[in-house]
Image (cartoon, rainbow, N blue to C red; front, side, top):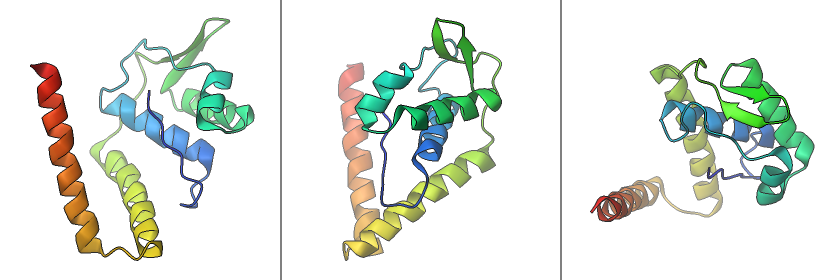
Length: 133
């Protein structure tokens, strides 16, 4: 599970974790029954306070995205709600806003960002094609 945290985009870290886990579950990158990393492990990997990860996991559990199994960990729920297209677009819009703000701070034009996204997409597709071969 790859989660990327940005301390400069103004979105609370726990919410970044929540949004990314929800998106990965909705996109099928995390499947029902898949175990999430333990709180301490993920906190160490992201270099954040374990309470931040615990808060994110509680939020995900309250929304039905994950389920806690006593002493066995936290798992993607098999009955959890899948995100609607509108919710997925909202999450992506927040990430785009953060990207555009960062690009502005780095003095990079929107056209250049769009071009870079296209090139990165091509690279990812090529990598995915090579893995499937």
